[in-house]
Length: 212
Image (tube, rainbow, N blue to C red; front, side, top):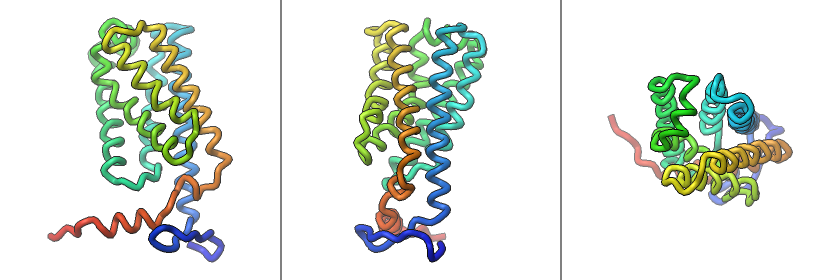
């Protein structure tokens, strides 16, 4: 903390937004943008060029989402940990699908066998969780769009009431909304993404102290 760091009055006392906070916010926004661009690129690649090499976009998608979850500021620690767990489960699910089907056949197998959505779905649940957090904090319409379209598309396809084309269209719309969400955040003050740090401090103080 430096003397030039902005100070705010929180619910549980004063707090300061430091250079470390601002760096974390910047990294969160960049990571979210990378995830959105990667998801968009994956779907466009699949539509325009087919399955071959479309899987490569999963790598920046998973990395971007994982880093965004690392740097996101969420008051409720169990919720934050749950989103990280969903991300991990989804990554493992994609890894299993890529191993079983082969990289260039994975998407074709996913289309032919929608039950694989149960394996890869947690990754998108984590993404929807970020969308919900952003809508809850900032009431951005693109955030609620992201939150709703992902489960609608995947669950609709899973239970057989939605064809592949419509599912992919909804997923592409959600990906584009994520890009819009990330881009719009770059014009915001870092303090908005950090939130009330006094709440973080209070919640941490209420956690039971572990004894050796």
